[in-house]
Image 1 (cartoon, helix red, strand yellow):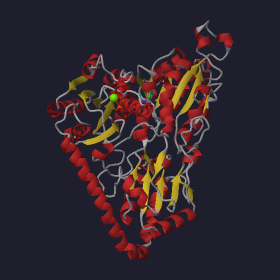
Image 2: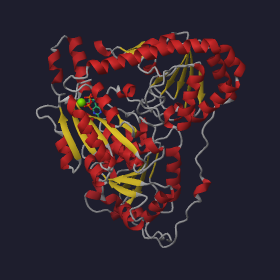
Image 3: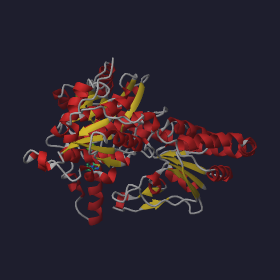
Image 4: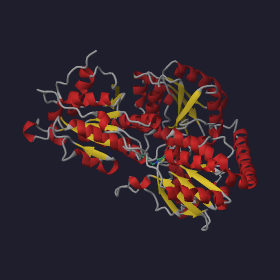
Amino acid sequence: MEKPRAEWGSDVVVDLLKAFEIEYVALNPGATFRGLHDSLVNYGGNHAPEIVLCAHEEIAVGLAHGYARVKGRPMAAAVHNVVGLQHASMAIYNAWADRLPVIVMGGTGPMDTANRRPWIDWVHTALVQGNLVRDFVKWDDQPASVEAIPDSFVRAYRLATTDPMGPVYICYDGDVQEKRLDKEVAFPPLDRYPAPLPLQAPEEGFEKTLRWLLEAKRPVILADWVGRREAGFRALIELAELLAVPVLDQFGRLNFPVQNPLNLTGQQDKVIPQADLILALDVPDFEGAVTKRAQEKGNRRAVPLLSSGAKIINVSLDDLLVRAWATDFNKLREADLMIMADTSVFLPELVRRLKAEKSGLDKLRGEIDRRRGEWNDIYEEKKAALERETKTKWDEKPVSMTRLYAEIIEAVKGENWVLTNGSSQGKENLYMPASEFNQILGKYKGGGLGYGLPASLGAALAHKGSGKLCVDLQPDGDLLFTVSALWTAVHHKIPLLIVVCSNRSYFNDEEHQERIAIVRNRPIENKTIGIRIEDPEVDFGAMARTYGCWGAGPITEPKDLTKTLREAVKVVKEGKPALVDVVCQMR
Ligand SMILES: Cc1ncc(C[n+]2csc(CCOP(=O)(O)OP(=O)(O)O)c2C)c(N)n1
Ligand SMILES: [Mg+2]
């Protein structure tokens, strides 16, 4: 079929969305982008991209965030002028902190005050709207004519998808969107604007890293964002295994198979003090990775675990995306060698060079095997401790988190499952036996609640039709921010298993109030005031059903889990969302 010719300004935006293979535009409607909305439906045929209707802009952007985690490329969200953008801002910040691309589009104006309606066009127009989010997007723009739209979009897309990636915001003036075109708008040849090739380390970086790795007695790897690309994920496994180097996963993504005996995540107290070389791969928060939290007494400072004699190699792209507003760049990192490189090309090349060092490796064989055994002992201890915890708490009421993990594992056995979100403490990262690239998508990096369900829906949307079974391990407090995303899940038939961890509390803060009470010698029992989600308790199963979603629970009896989860999985496999509300322990 011949492509219809753009007749209106916003038709050109749709041409670009199609050219860049944007599959979905998540939105809550608004008159400032009524031109774009019409173009999506009537010019684009509401297909590729298709509109995903959301009840809140935070949901729209959160959904696009989750989609990008799976695909590594963006979908779009459209948000209504200053009001939609303000609602969207938390989710934009989460995507920013997570270094993931979202094309956020907005409408405004008209900027020409002579064309404005009284009141509403004035209170909904800013100079300029992008200001609101400029500190946490990679770029923002407001093309002043239809002719300026293509270049603006191409630049936005390329910046958003170049590592370190991030959200971008493009604002379309109502007058520009609604301009009738009297001639064809010239389109740049899109293949003339390729994404840059990934950044590779210089020779010195490889030479030193290789030499230091071979000289070290106890090298240790920290990894946070390596797992964002499959090539990096695979090469890291090879590297760790070749040299018997333990990996401490920081869980920005799944960086290393959970059940690999070299996965000593959670054992930093035992591992870090032994290290004479740390290879930090895409670790923005180095401090957090090599220290122990000692929050019990209300302390903020962390206790160092790393010996001062240990060498540090840092490989990352972090310094390429630093802004002065939020300090999401974390504490200043020390290192003996700083390499600015993309781990998805650095690690495969490092492994290739390492394998070529045959004689060097052969000489070290005995030593490598010895330390492999010693690290393996720690792994076995860790495994036994996890199993012990599961067993001890098996019949406890409310349901223990470890029992819940075990039941979920059983319910999805044999399925190609993906964990799209996690609990506040993230212990599922130790229990869920993920081994595949992107099998655990991780939690928010921005720490803004309201993330779990929207991002999980985005992930499930990205996986739709792929045979993957997506599971959202969903804390209750986080869910309450964006629970109306259930409507979107049902309406758009997004298959997702939502397991609500109902501890009926914003428990993370209960812990903080307890610490403060201890320090101030005040009544600890008051820690639940202003924090517990009780009186009334929320019935998430019933809530799901009001949105037309399959919902079960609240489950209070551990023995009821198996059957209910099995039924829920069946619903999800039929292509629909299902929610199981589980009353569970605080931690
Ligand atoms: C937007 C936002 N508001 C408040 C907080 C502070 N906060 C951090 S964790 C937390 C409690 C989360 O409760 P829930 O999601 O139920 O997880 P739980 O700690 O109970 O496991 C709160 C309120 C936040 N991080 N983000
Ligand atoms: Mg909670």
